[in-house]
Image (cartoon, rainbow, N blue to C red):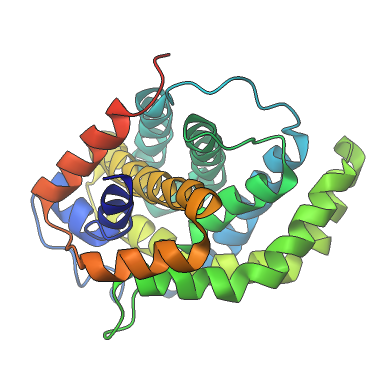
Length: 277
């Protein structure tokens, strides 16, 4: 069932759990132990990264036919940037965030298209940007699907405004001002995306992490947002067919958890429904 797969993908284990699994060690205390100078740079890095993603969104004007997404290719791309960032420690990690985010955003666009979305539509490109906001922390009493819907509600008006700006079409000279026009929208996303970016940088700031671990961290980082993107665009596809209220009500009845076996099953099921490359 597509909706069950979407719920599992949106409810998958959080990023810190994935890092711990990739590196074979618990990393819960990393964010608290980060140097102050690194902490101050995280918000700026998140904003810069999202501005770079906006530039890609503004220049994406053709959708192409629906086909399977190239998730592994994008994982390789971010593994390379992670390796470079890991080699240079925290400073390198901060510097590579905009590049990694741009590669991830291209992957999100690719996933959206694979789920039947028209990425030439500015509204769809705005939804691709919104994926970065869905990776933020959950409140103690939230399930993943309620937190997901709440975040969408918070972003609703700003998303429409962003789509309107993207619809105008901009040249290279206007890209800088575009990010400025969308500053309020990007600030909301950055507030949530920055939490996950902070976790990623904290892991890469560990002494002797090195290039190999930096690559593993970025693979986990990208895989996490690819799962969220897949879940988001399955959900949107079902909303288009059945209506938002009906989909939300059906999701609430599922109550599925983030078990690894469920995640693997959901990813495999979603992949089988995709057209061949």
